[in-house]
Length: 99
Image (cartoon, rainbow, N blue to C red; front, side, top):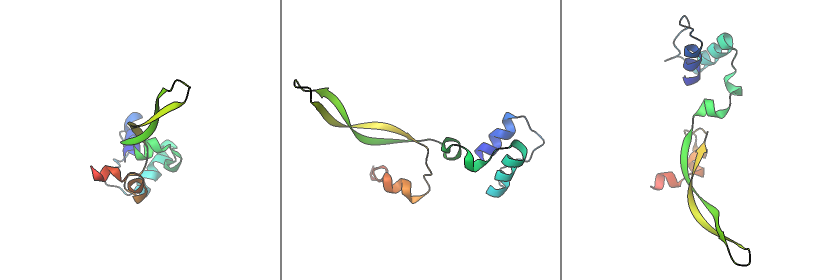
């Protein structure tokens, strides 16, 4: 819906149907026939949106006198462009539900 609506608004195509409430196939057809966009070939950023997830990672915080890295676990923010409805996202990020 977001890509279809943005395409209609961006190009000022007031005569085109509002994609709200239509089936996915209709939205994909609208994008392809009217704007030459193939939804499946768009980057995931535009198909899935962005999700910010806190993840723990090993980060080098300093080096010892002999040059060896000192690693510590730190929380970082990761930007993902994934389908959060599917189970794979939740399997890879179970800590979200633990909070």
